[in-house]
Length: 114
Length: 112
Image (cartoon, rainbow over all chains, first blue to last red; front, side, top):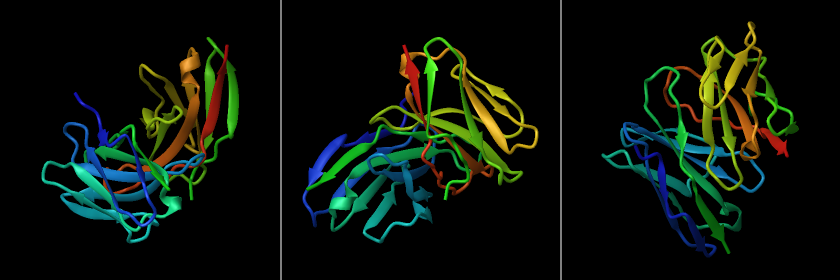
């Protein structure tokens, strides 16, 4: 049973560019969330997708957008990259509607903006 | 803001039990306590969660006080591979749209 998988593992972008990160949820999960983790900090919630719609959003600007596909996989897009966007981006999945459900995380995508 | 308070760091000798405390004095009746850990440069790893009763799995035990205002994660026989940042998180039980709020966690260092 594959867990949460993310790609790419590492990437380097230039300020002003755009980036797309990808996530496949754990088998049987239908909800995907994205988190940003800056060096030395805990993960910060960006947004969550369920049934191909954004359901909840953290305190992140509109430059951060996402998408969920019918197979439950998801993409995170960041436009107009800033140096401060350099971070580990984590994807997490869960099964919605299950009381006390467990959220599982992927290994993340390291983004460096230069 | 995080709803939990944890010590920033702890040491434990290899082979001994590591007891990590967490205060969540404002926890609501429908909120679970979740524990994750994060080894350097990896994604957070789920450890255990509970609502009211104590819980145990192959990784750890979770002891929740009767008033639910605090809990303790116990790693019964700590190894060097248990060195990590441990996060205690409270989360509603509805299983719906709720992003996890991470605090700073406890950096547990297992000493040989």
